[in-house]
Image 1 (cartoon, one colour):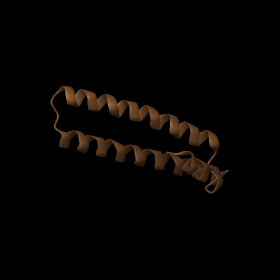
Image 2 (cartoon, rainbow, N blue to C red):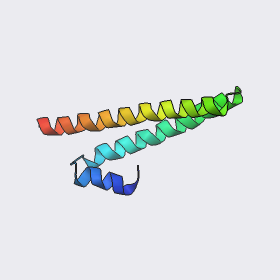
Image 3 (cartoon, rainbow, N blue to C red):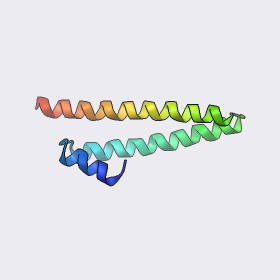
Length: 80
């Protein structure tokens, strides 16, 4: 997520800066885990197609998780 996207979330959507920072940190951790997964799959002889499919699946899972996390944060703000 780039700086402009982060600032838009904060300014336009009202997402607390701390929640965005936490989501970005978790996304970085997930990215490192994905790279580790890909290294292991490569070491076990995975094809380029298998690596791409794994990467796409993990990225979709992370996008879904981040969006759900941000929605939950917004719902909590709305409820308060």
